[in-house]
Length: 221
Length: 251
Image 1 (cartoon, chains in turn purple, yellow):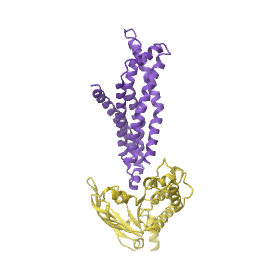
Image 2 (cartoon, each protein chain N blue to C red):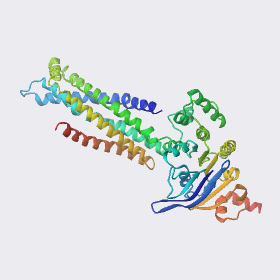
Image 3 (cartoon, rainbow over the protein chains, first blue to last red):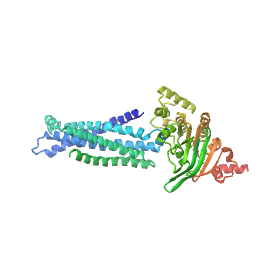
Image 4 (spheres, each protein chain N blue to C red):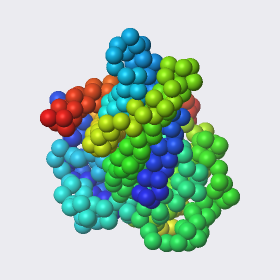
């Protein structure tokens, strides 16, 4: 049962979030490349540097942070509403009376699924972001395909990918736990459920941004 | 049997239950009745272990629910079935999956054996063949019966029903009452029903406990209800103007 529930959650979090992650990543990559081109035009910095900057910005910061902020809104509010609804409809009480360990059955699969799927989504977001930068800049003639690819392949530091995965794990853990806590302990009616769902998103976002700063500080020290 | 022993419960400054002592007998339909806010639901939640009493004990035969360790509690819970006021059927599962849920969680039976048990329970509540329907596709009365089927699928020794007739028409209510009573007798279950439905009191009230402001105001059976002169009982039972007129016309 736990295994099946974990798979269901993995599908919901992973496949279910792919369209929104795809959409956001492609535009973030596109906008980053266009704006860096604008800022660097007229300077002596070679234009292939834009590919390098876009790659590192996407990997280190934009892919993990923006993706997880968006997932806190989509997945986090969904988790809080699902658990809160179950609490209000006495589903959780029913399971507890049956002897089911509700935190293990309802929350643990969500945490495991998030820890497995959110890094995958972040990784996909990074790749799609770089692709978005290419699509937005090369066909319109901001710079050539060769320049962009040279930039993307220059000065690659594998440690940055490690940082991306650390952020993805930590942010995934934060957004799942905060959201599940808000939903699981909801009291009252539909207004309180809405408030819990909002709190799940707001608190997750604040903690993600705080964790982002701490991770950046620790891993770049 | 289940024995409530000196149950006190308070939420902050509010004393909800004040020293409840009552014996819920096996093989009988035990009713907890009382006005809204009298402490019925809190008592039921203490009996099933969802709330802990401030002081007092709940004995399931010779096991104290309040002091039982986790392992004993887990085993005990597998012997408990509960029908909720709002049914608490899982919306995302069909009827078969809902009833099979306790079997999936706690047994090592094969899928075929589990489904056989599900069919037996659906047969028992007179709802054969609705396995693939979803809770939203059946009526309130049918949902109650599915709730009963799920509550009895693990063959419990103790059955709790919270307002089993709420939101149901009188005829369906009688069907549900009779079903609960039949299951109780057939399997010698200790059944505790939380209700304020007078029909249930007069139909299946074999052992009744009347709560008034958190205090046990009266206990007895349906046969004693009409004869007893207890004022609280009288006020509660004959609160309906229809019944009052009926009695006056009989006089």
